[in-house]
Length: 70
Image (cartoon, rainbow, N blue to C red):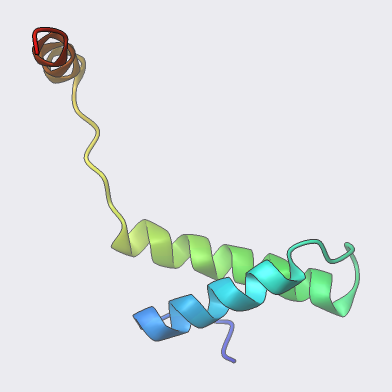
């Protein structure tokens, strides 16, 4: 598996699966180093593909008031 960059959804799923398997690996081991690399490239992929707009405080307050009135 290429640990430079995740380019597809399938690669992302494979990386998540592998990461969940080695998540608790000890630091300084081969699997621990692999987990660290996977964490970095998974985060980079998620930052590029799962962007969430954060509402400004006024919009958040309006939404909250609308929810309260229902």
